[in-house]
Image 1 (cartoon, rainbow, N blue to C red):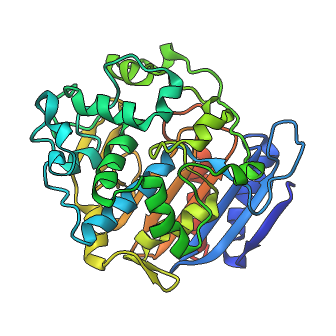
Image 2 (cartoon, one colour):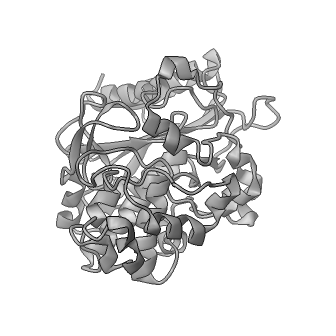
Length: 376
């Protein structure tokens, strides 16, 4: 059996067993799992290796690109600004970012950015991969652009653009980048080892993600809008191999952390604004997570999804309790929070699966944690 490091309460032993089984089967190469109850860890484990060659073990402070789980950090920053009265989710984006009113977007509201309903899931102008590290180019092009559909009428997953859109609103309000604001206002108070824009000093701790097999477009039957959004620039799982990607602030996709650090931050949501004696949101501010914005078949992903203020809510794809929310990352990473149970579950790994959504490894970890919570 794979050697699982870390600690877990005996009640949650099956979580460690699930991770070990995945490592033994080769569906995972290196991974970490954290389960928090009331903000305190009951599972904090890791195992496997940092690469396919097995040159070094995954250790306690190994970091990995968690892809779209990064979005939950950006959501939390926006929720905090709204809670402080600096941001109104129902205000036009142009109140904070005047240039955004171009292209007929004067009525697009901040909540549309949060819930993927702004109609800006990609760029019209040709983009090169390294353009994603150019904040001014990414944001100015989106500000000038016309929406691809009527904002507010449907969600169309903003794979990478959401981070620039919400992040620019945050920058206009705070005067500093979202990565810097997150570091000082969220990560530091919570002691969370998570970065939006990885400092060079942390490079030695990074496990580079292992890209999934090439997507079979015939099987996926992608829509025209998905192709348009995911090919300019091409969505390429090898980007995290490059320092330009890791160093940039791409607040929808390039956050680096591990299950422990992601769970430490997002336990604020499970704790109704507070975790481990640190309060970042009022209970009322935290309630905004569950302010449903849209539900139905997502125009990009093709799944039945339901979005609150940023976070995904219970739907046929991810059935959960009424006070639970979640999101995941490209390749399989997953974070789930349930306020009724004061429960936070996170899975972060280096071997990427080939499903756009619905990776069974993360679901297996969640099922094992929930069974442990129930005493089973």
